[in-house]
Amino acid sequence: MSSPSLFSLHGRRILITGSYRGLGLAIARGLAQAGATVVLNGRNEEGVAKSVEELRTDQLDAHGAAFDISDEASVKDTLERIRKDLGPLHGLVNNAGIQRRHPLHEMPVEDFRLVLETNLTAAFLTARHVVPDMMQRRSGKIINMCSLMSDLARPTTGNYAAAKAGLRMLTRSMAAEWASHGLQINAIGPGYFATEMTRPLKEDPEFNEWICGRTPAGRWGDPDELQGVAVFLASDASNYINGQIIYVDGGLTAVI
Ligand code: GCO
Picture 1 (cartoon, rainbow, N blue to C red):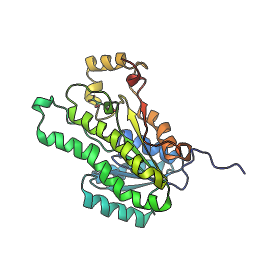
Picture 2: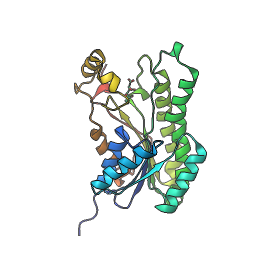
Picture 3: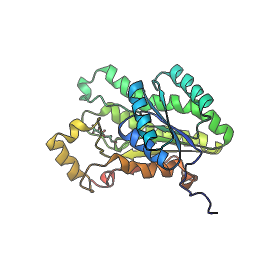
Picture 4: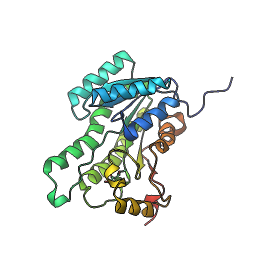
């Protein structure tokens, strides 16, 4: 009998935050297709339930947990409920993120704080409640959804870029502290993908032309094109990789 594939996720329970739509839902689908039991998340209870149903209709093992990832009490209570109902998590994808685009000199402080809270602090809050079980088992996978903006900036996204750059260093810091406990913590850096968050950009002919010209692949990414790297980083195939970021950006960060 052949041994299970290095990329198999059978028997693994993985929470993906911000995953009832967009990149998070595409990643959750890919992980579930590789055999994982996936837990979708979002603050929108109806949206989470609808996406869980969508995955279950495709015979995928999906569950839902609607909670606010920036509220530590809600994170703690929900993770305890997931642990009780399904069992301890083997993986966490910190995907939830928002954009509040403004020129920095006009940016409301609240929008700066909100983006940092949601895109950076929430990853810390969720991970710290997932890690004790992983440490006890000496095994676990954390995937932080960074961005090309972990390294590159453009006007009006200073809050988002600061958060995603911070998330890149938080990924390295998590590896520095938790790799010795048997965990692997890495990041994915998407380039420009067609989602709700980027719809206004893609529908802007000038911006769309700029991105297609700036990206060596000459096009926007399809959310399903993030599934392979997510399965890789959630599987045994990445057991000796830690603190790294893998850009899935059509080559954008590789060229000037
Ligand atoms: C923007 C976009 C970008 C990308 C994201 C991909 O306003 O330029 O929202 O931030 O979508 O960074 O990783």
